[in-house]
Amino acid sequence: MNISQAPDGRDWSRAEGRPRDRSSDLSIPALGRAPSPRLYNPDIAPSTRDERRWGTYSLFMFWSNTAHNLGAYTFAAGLFVLGLKGWEVVVGILLASVVVYLGCRLSGPIGAATGVPFPVVSRLSWGVFGAIVPALIRAFAAIFWYGIQTYLASVAINAILLRFIPSSAGLQNYSFVGLDALSWISFVILWVVQLAILSRGMDIIRHVQGWSGLVIWALMIILGIYMLIKTGGHISLNTSTTHLSAGQQVLHTAYILGLIMGILATLMVNYADFTRFAPSQKSVRWGTIWGVPVNWTIFAVTSVVVSAGSLSLYGKVLLDPAEIFAKLSNAALLLVGALLLIVAAVGVNIVANFVSPAFDFSNAWPQKISFRTGGVITAIISLVSLPWKLYSTPAVINYFLGALGAMMGPLFAIMVVDYYLIKARKFDIDDMFSTDTGGRYYYRHGVNYDAVYSFVPAAVISIILAVVPAFSLVAPFSWYAGVLIAAALYYGLSRRSGHANARNGKVRVEA
Image (tube, rainbow, N blue to C red; front, top):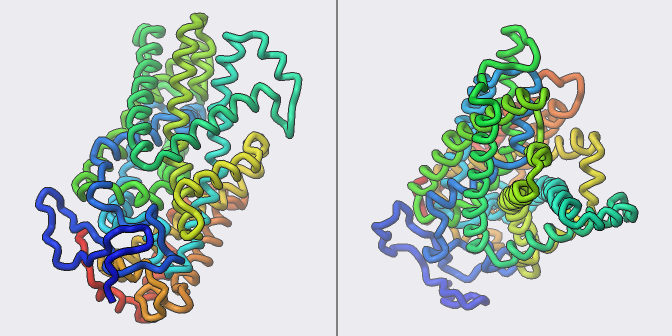
């Protein structure tokens, strides 16, 4: 039955047989019948051609925000502190970025082909109701990091207030639930700004992350030039802080391949949240090429220059760019530096930790929760979780957040194996929004138990490797273990259960 008008007023005329736009390498999918209200709202519906404005530049800047930020710099500087030479850090990050690129070349095209966000993509492999599970796992991993990143960025606001309004120091004498009044003001300012940006929708986010990406590039270039000038250009990529044997150097460089996944695995999983707005697969391909291997390699070089320069100037590696700006005697430069750090933090926090849970919560209860409402829920949970306490508790970071991160490998494996090997890139867009028991993705009571039975053992093993001290030597590679185990289990179970027959979809989009 074809119904031309859905509850939101959209025209659901069937897309089958519609001529392809020759300016694009995509056939834009559209619903051909009214979707189930339990699975649909306009924010998670297939994106229209007019909404597909995230071209190569936008996706490049998306990855710029994830690379050139405080957390990533601290990670790179930490590798330098471990004793790796500058060129080894660069090589390690380059190799890791190639792995991430290959993963994104699998996950990104799924979003562009289907036009739907990660939680809806998950309905293909987990079932229309089972998809809530991977979505919420991804959501809570993002929410806690969102709160922590907001707290860390608020420290820069504190520095500005203390420098230019000295009397504000008195607010530090009053505290509530472990945070002084001045820090509360700084945190709430950033909290409100980020929520206001997200509430305006994905197109505003596209503009904000485009500008913040430029600011971040400017920040890292300025720091690099500053260090080169201050050291007279005497920065060696062959310098290290600790002597390591050849074997240790190789092992630590290999660790980078695993540790980078701790930063980017979540974005590989929900890359569809952004590529669903790409006008073509070519945009996804080039945006990812420029954004991941090229961008992250340049980031590695600038980070090494700044780290080696700080070692030469101050006798130690400064792990936080804010420490460098704090050493500036010029108040104007301090203000500019702090503002740049704030913009950089906001940019990465929104794209990496805010968009995903907003879509994930919207998918959990589409009738009541829109993308904006999902953003409000994310912001509230991040606030009540008291992120400053989470950040100051190593056990929480290492075990709880480490466990959540370890689950990303199995989630990624199930998604890509299902789409490429089981369903051969074929999907039925109508059945992705249907509660009809005969639908392709209804499986059994709306859940594909092949995904559940593959995920649980893979996730348990990945978590054990990631958090149990006895496995510390292989902990950085827990993501890879989770991917391999989940991929093998899901492929075998799906072939045995006959779910490969779901490949006979009505719409096929080459990705």
